[in-house]
Amino acid sequence: MVITISDPLDMHLHLRDGDMLEIVAPLSSKTFSGALIMPNLVPPVTTKEAVNEYKIRIEKAKKEHTFTPYMTLFFRSDYTKEFLEEVKDDILAIKLYPAGITTNSEGGVSGFDLEELSSTLNAMSDLGIPLCVHGETGGFVMDREAEFIPIYEMLAKNFPNLKIIMEHITTKEAVAALDRYDNLYATITLHHLYITLDDVAGGLLQPHLFCKPIAKRPEDRTALLNVALGAHPKVMFGSDSAPHPRNSKEAPGCAAGVFTAPIALQALAQLFDKHGALENLQSFVSDNAKRIYGITPPSKEVVLEKSEYLVPEIYENSVVPMFAGQSLEWRVVRAG
Image (cartoon, rainbow, N blue to C red):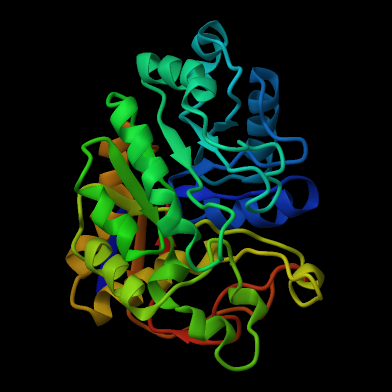
Protein backbone atom coordinates (compact mmCIF):
# COMPACT_ATOMS: atom_id res chain seq x y z
CA MET A 1 0.00 0.00 0.00
CA VAL A 2 1.27 3.48 -0.94
CA ILE A 3 -0.02 6.95 -0.03
CA THR A 4 1.07 10.43 -1.07
CA ILE A 5 0.89 13.44 1.24
CA SER A 6 1.01 16.87 -0.42
CA ASP A 7 2.76 19.75 1.33
CA PRO A 8 2.93 18.31 4.87
CA LEU A 9 3.14 20.99 7.55
CA ASP A 10 4.30 20.89 11.16
CA MET A 11 2.61 23.82 12.88
CA HIS A 12 4.58 23.63 16.15
CA LEU A 13 8.27 22.85 15.88
CA HIS A 14 11.33 23.46 18.07
CA LEU A 15 14.55 23.68 16.09
CA ARG A 16 16.70 25.14 18.90
CA ASP A 17 19.91 26.87 17.78
CA GLY A 18 23.62 26.28 17.34
CA ASP A 19 24.78 22.67 17.08
CA MET A 20 21.31 21.30 17.83
CA LEU A 21 19.80 23.33 14.99
CA GLU A 22 22.36 21.86 12.60
CA ILE A 23 21.35 18.33 13.66
CA VAL A 24 17.56 18.61 13.69
CA ALA A 25 16.67 21.14 10.97
CA PRO A 26 17.43 18.76 8.05
CA LEU A 27 15.36 16.03 9.71
CA SER A 28 12.24 18.22 9.45
CA SER A 29 13.03 19.93 6.16
CA LYS A 30 13.51 16.58 4.43
CA THR A 31 9.88 15.48 4.79
CA PHE A 32 7.93 18.66 5.62
CA SER A 33 7.07 21.53 3.33
CA GLY A 34 7.13 24.02 6.17
CA ALA A 35 6.81 24.45 9.92
CA LEU A 36 5.85 27.04 12.50
CA ILE A 37 9.08 27.70 14.42
CA MET A 38 8.91 28.32 18.16
CA PRO A 39 10.67 31.44 19.52
CA ASN A 40 11.74 30.27 23.00
CA LEU A 41 15.46 30.54 22.43
CA VAL A 42 17.88 32.02 24.96
CA PRO A 43 17.32 34.95 24.73
CA PRO A 44 13.80 34.66 23.26
CA VAL A 45 12.99 35.99 19.79
CA THR A 46 11.39 39.40 20.45
CA THR A 47 12.69 41.73 17.71
CA LYS A 48 12.50 41.98 13.93
CA GLU A 49 16.26 41.56 13.76
CA ALA A 50 16.17 38.40 15.90
CA VAL A 51 13.40 36.91 13.74
CA ASN A 52 15.30 37.48 10.51
CA GLU A 53 18.66 36.38 11.88
CA TYR A 54 17.16 33.15 13.23
CA LYS A 55 15.43 32.52 9.89
CA ILE A 56 18.76 32.90 8.09
CA ARG A 57 20.34 30.33 10.42
CA ILE A 58 17.45 27.92 9.77
CA GLU A 59 17.64 28.39 6.01
CA LYS A 60 21.32 27.52 6.14
CA ALA A 61 20.82 24.52 8.43
CA LYS A 62 17.98 22.96 6.40
CA LYS A 63 20.46 22.10 3.64
CA GLU A 64 19.08 21.70 0.12
CA HIS A 65 15.56 20.71 1.11
CA THR A 66 12.48 22.64 0.02
CA PHE A 67 11.12 23.97 3.30
CA THR A 68 9.65 27.24 4.62
CA PRO A 69 10.28 28.19 8.25
CA TYR A 70 7.26 30.20 9.36
CA MET A 71 8.62 32.46 12.07
CA THR A 72 7.09 33.59 15.37
CA LEU A 73 7.70 36.21 18.03
CA PHE A 74 7.80 35.52 21.77
CA PHE A 75 4.77 37.34 23.23
CA ARG A 76 5.33 40.55 25.14
CA SER A 77 2.60 42.79 26.50
CA ASP A 78 4.46 45.96 25.48
CA TYR A 79 4.59 45.38 21.74
CA THR A 80 3.22 48.48 20.00
CA LYS A 81 0.97 48.42 16.97
CA GLU A 82 3.66 50.28 15.05
CA PHE A 83 6.22 47.57 15.85
CA LEU A 84 3.82 44.78 14.91
CA GLU A 85 3.00 46.51 11.60
CA GLU A 86 6.72 46.62 10.86
CA VAL A 87 7.33 42.94 11.70
CA LYS A 88 4.03 41.50 10.41
CA ASP A 89 5.40 40.31 7.06
CA ASP A 90 8.30 38.52 8.77
CA ILE A 91 6.19 36.36 11.09
CA LEU A 92 3.16 34.13 10.91
CA ALA A 93 2.13 34.22 14.59
CA ILE A 94 3.06 35.27 18.10
CA LYS A 95 3.59 32.63 20.79
CA LEU A 96 2.45 33.24 24.38
CA TYR A 97 4.00 31.26 27.23
CA PRO A 98 2.97 31.47 30.88
CA ALA A 99 6.14 32.39 32.76
CA GLY A 100 8.30 29.40 33.71
CA ILE A 101 5.80 26.78 32.56
CA THR A 102 8.10 24.98 30.08
CA THR A 103 11.56 25.11 28.49
CA ASN A 104 12.98 28.65 28.21
CA SER A 105 9.70 30.34 29.14
CA GLU A 106 10.93 32.38 32.09
CA GLY A 107 10.19 35.64 30.26
CA GLY A 108 6.58 34.71 29.63
CA VAL A 109 3.34 36.14 31.00
CA SER A 110 2.88 36.23 34.78
CA GLY A 111 -0.83 36.28 35.44
CA PHE A 112 -3.37 37.09 32.77
CA ASP A 113 -4.42 40.66 33.47
CA LEU A 114 -6.70 41.63 30.58
CA GLU A 115 -5.80 45.30 30.85
CA GLU A 116 -2.08 44.52 30.68
CA LEU A 117 -2.44 42.19 27.67
CA SER A 118 -5.05 44.14 25.71
CA SER A 119 -2.75 46.57 23.89
CA THR A 120 -0.77 43.81 22.16
CA LEU A 121 -3.80 41.57 21.63
CA ASN A 122 -5.90 44.36 20.12
CA ALA A 123 -3.07 45.22 17.75
CA MET A 124 -2.70 41.57 16.77
CA SER A 125 -6.43 41.32 16.19
CA ASP A 126 -6.45 44.44 14.00
CA LEU A 127 -3.45 43.21 11.98
CA GLY A 128 -4.66 39.61 11.63
CA ILE A 129 -1.71 38.07 13.51
CA PRO A 130 -2.70 34.75 15.15
CA LEU A 131 -1.95 34.08 18.83
CA CYS A 132 -0.47 30.67 19.71
CA VAL A 133 -0.73 29.77 23.39
CA HIS A 134 0.95 27.21 25.63
CA GLY A 135 -2.14 26.78 27.76
CA GLU A 136 -1.16 25.60 31.24
CA THR A 137 -1.46 27.06 34.72
CA GLY A 138 1.03 26.50 37.51
CA GLY A 139 -1.32 24.10 39.33
CA PHE A 140 -1.19 20.34 39.83
CA VAL A 141 0.54 18.93 36.77
CA MET A 142 -2.36 16.74 35.57
CA ASP A 143 -4.85 19.61 35.86
CA ARG A 144 -2.87 22.49 34.39
CA GLU A 145 -4.41 22.44 30.92
CA ALA A 146 -7.99 21.96 32.12
CA GLU A 147 -7.47 24.84 34.57
CA PHE A 148 -6.34 27.05 31.69
CA ILE A 149 -9.59 26.66 29.70
CA PRO A 150 -11.25 29.69 31.41
CA ILE A 151 -8.30 31.82 30.24
CA TYR A 152 -8.84 30.62 26.67
CA GLU A 153 -12.52 31.49 27.06
CA MET A 154 -11.66 34.95 28.39
CA LEU A 155 -9.37 35.59 25.43
CA ALA A 156 -11.85 34.21 22.89
CA LYS A 157 -14.72 36.33 24.24
CA ASN A 158 -12.79 39.58 24.63
CA PHE A 159 -10.94 39.36 21.31
CA PRO A 160 -13.47 37.72 18.96
CA ASN A 161 -11.52 38.66 15.83
CA LEU A 162 -8.26 37.24 17.16
CA LYS A 163 -7.39 33.78 15.86
CA ILE A 164 -6.27 31.78 18.91
CA ILE A 165 -4.47 28.46 18.59
CA MET A 166 -4.50 26.21 21.63
CA GLU A 167 -1.12 24.56 21.26
CA HIS A 168 -0.48 20.84 21.79
CA ILE A 169 -3.81 20.16 23.50
CA THR A 170 -3.92 17.06 25.69
CA THR A 171 -7.35 16.97 27.36
CA LYS A 172 -10.96 16.26 26.59
CA GLU A 173 -11.79 19.69 28.05
CA ALA A 174 -9.67 21.43 25.42
CA VAL A 175 -11.32 19.37 22.67
CA ALA A 176 -14.74 20.42 23.93
CA ALA A 177 -13.73 24.10 23.94
CA LEU A 178 -12.96 23.96 20.21
CA ASP A 179 -16.60 23.98 19.21
CA ARG A 180 -17.72 26.60 21.73
CA TYR A 181 -15.80 29.48 20.18
CA ASP A 182 -15.42 30.32 16.51
CA ASN A 183 -11.94 31.78 16.99
CA LEU A 184 -10.39 28.84 18.88
CA TYR A 185 -8.24 26.30 16.99
CA ALA A 186 -5.75 23.66 18.13
CA THR A 187 -2.64 21.71 17.33
CA ILE A 188 -2.18 18.10 18.42
CA THR A 189 1.14 16.28 18.70
CA LEU A 190 2.07 12.81 17.56
CA HIS A 191 3.06 11.65 21.02
CA HIS A 192 -0.18 12.71 22.68
CA LEU A 193 -2.09 10.65 20.12
CA TYR A 194 -0.04 7.59 21.09
CA ILE A 195 0.70 7.73 24.80
CA THR A 196 -0.88 8.29 28.20
CA LEU A 197 0.86 9.03 31.49
CA ASP A 198 0.99 5.29 32.09
CA ASP A 199 3.44 4.95 29.18
CA VAL A 200 5.68 7.58 30.77
CA ALA A 201 5.64 6.51 34.42
CA GLY A 202 3.49 3.40 34.81
CA GLY A 203 6.53 1.12 34.96
CA LEU A 204 10.15 2.12 34.70
CA LEU A 205 10.35 5.84 33.97
CA GLN A 206 10.63 6.57 30.25
CA PRO A 207 12.53 9.88 30.06
CA HIS A 208 12.24 10.21 26.28
CA LEU A 209 8.44 10.30 26.63
CA PHE A 210 8.46 12.99 29.32
CA CYS A 211 7.04 16.24 27.97
CA LYS A 212 5.11 19.34 28.91
CA PRO A 213 2.19 19.35 28.82
CA ILE A 214 2.46 15.90 30.34
CA ALA A 215 0.57 13.00 28.75
CA LYS A 216 -2.84 12.54 30.34
CA ARG A 217 -5.50 9.86 30.81
CA PRO A 218 -6.85 7.31 28.28
CA GLU A 219 -10.11 9.24 27.93
CA ASP A 220 -8.15 12.37 27.02
CA ARG A 221 -6.20 10.50 24.35
CA THR A 222 -9.48 9.14 22.97
CA ALA A 223 -10.86 12.68 22.65
CA LEU A 224 -7.72 13.77 20.77
CA LEU A 225 -7.89 10.76 18.47
CA ASN A 226 -11.53 11.43 17.65
CA VAL A 227 -10.88 14.93 16.30
CA ALA A 228 -7.54 14.14 14.63
CA LEU A 229 -8.69 10.96 12.90
CA GLY A 230 -11.99 12.60 12.00
CA ALA A 231 -10.28 15.53 10.25
CA HIS A 232 -11.95 18.12 12.49
CA PRO A 233 -11.55 21.37 10.50
CA LYS A 234 -10.16 23.34 13.46
CA VAL A 235 -7.40 20.86 14.34
CA MET A 236 -3.98 20.52 12.73
CA PHE A 237 -0.74 18.68 13.29
CA GLY A 238 1.92 20.35 15.42
CA SER A 239 4.63 17.95 16.51
CA ASP A 240 6.02 19.99 19.41
CA SER A 241 9.13 17.99 18.52
CA ALA A 242 11.50 19.20 21.22
CA PRO A 243 15.07 17.89 20.97
CA HIS A 244 17.38 17.73 23.96
CA PRO A 245 20.82 16.11 24.18
CA ARG A 246 20.64 12.55 25.46
CA ASN A 247 22.50 13.51 28.63
CA SER A 248 19.78 16.06 29.43
CA LYS A 249 17.02 13.47 29.04
CA GLU A 250 18.65 10.50 30.77
CA ALA A 251 19.54 12.48 33.86
CA PRO A 252 18.27 13.79 37.20
CA GLY A 253 16.13 16.78 36.37
CA CYS A 254 15.12 15.23 33.03
CA ALA A 255 14.40 17.89 30.39
CA ALA A 256 10.83 17.99 29.03
CA GLY A 257 10.36 17.23 25.35
CA VAL A 258 9.75 14.37 22.92
CA PHE A 259 11.77 14.29 19.69
CA THR A 260 9.48 13.12 16.89
CA ALA A 261 10.37 15.17 13.80
CA PRO A 262 12.14 12.48 11.74
CA ILE A 263 9.50 9.79 12.33
CA ALA A 264 6.32 11.88 12.51
CA LEU A 265 4.80 11.10 9.12
CA GLN A 266 5.64 7.39 9.35
CA ALA A 267 4.06 7.10 12.81
CA LEU A 268 1.01 9.16 11.82
CA ALA A 269 0.45 6.97 8.75
CA GLN A 270 0.64 3.90 11.00
CA LEU A 271 -1.87 5.39 13.45
CA PHE A 272 -4.37 6.59 10.84
CA ASP A 273 -4.08 3.27 8.99
CA LYS A 274 -4.73 1.33 12.19
CA HIS A 275 -7.95 3.29 12.71
CA GLY A 276 -9.08 3.10 9.08
CA ALA A 277 -8.69 6.86 8.58
CA LEU A 278 -5.83 7.22 6.07
CA GLU A 279 -8.07 9.37 3.86
CA ASN A 280 -8.06 12.04 6.59
CA LEU A 281 -4.29 12.24 7.09
CA GLN A 282 -3.89 14.86 4.36
CA SER A 283 -6.27 17.23 6.14
CA PHE A 284 -4.62 16.74 9.52
CA VAL A 285 -1.03 17.30 8.33
CA SER A 286 -1.61 19.94 5.66
CA ASP A 287 -4.99 21.13 4.41
CA ASN A 288 -6.40 22.36 7.72
CA ALA A 289 -3.24 24.34 8.53
CA LYS A 290 -3.22 25.95 5.09
CA ARG A 291 -6.79 27.15 5.58
CA ILE A 292 -6.46 28.19 9.23
CA TYR A 293 -3.28 30.19 8.71
CA GLY A 294 -3.98 31.24 5.12
CA ILE A 295 -0.62 30.00 3.83
CA THR A 296 0.62 28.44 0.62
CA PRO A 297 3.74 26.41 1.41
CA PRO A 298 6.20 25.31 -1.26
CA SER A 299 5.06 22.27 -3.17
CA LYS A 300 6.31 18.94 -1.85
CA GLU A 301 5.03 15.40 -2.24
CA VAL A 302 5.93 12.78 0.34
CA VAL A 303 5.30 9.18 -0.65
CA LEU A 304 4.95 6.58 2.09
CA GLU A 305 4.58 2.84 1.69
CA LYS A 306 3.41 0.22 4.14
CA SER A 307 6.64 -1.60 4.83
CA GLU A 308 8.84 -1.97 7.89
CA TYR A 309 10.92 1.00 9.02
CA LEU A 310 13.44 0.61 11.83
CA VAL A 311 13.72 3.85 13.79
CA PRO A 312 17.34 4.84 14.54
CA GLU A 313 18.48 4.54 18.14
CA ILE A 314 19.96 8.04 18.09
CA TYR A 315 20.76 10.89 15.70
CA GLU A 316 24.30 12.33 15.51
CA ASN A 317 25.16 10.60 18.78
CA SER A 318 23.05 13.23 20.50
CA VAL A 319 19.25 13.12 20.15
CA VAL A 320 17.06 10.08 20.86
CA PRO A 321 13.77 9.92 18.93
CA MET A 322 10.43 8.52 20.00
CA PHE A 323 10.23 4.81 19.07
CA ALA A 324 14.05 4.56 19.10
CA GLY A 325 15.13 1.09 17.98
CA GLN A 326 11.54 0.03 17.27
CA SER A 327 9.88 -0.86 13.98
CA LEU A 328 7.10 1.18 12.41
CA GLU A 329 4.79 -0.20 9.76
CA TRP A 330 5.22 2.70 7.30
CA ARG A 331 8.30 4.27 5.72
CA VAL A 332 9.01 7.34 3.58
CA VAL A 333 10.14 6.26 0.13
CA ARG A 334 10.30 9.66 -1.57
CA ALA A 335 10.11 13.31 -0.53
CA GLY A 336 10.43 16.24 -2.87
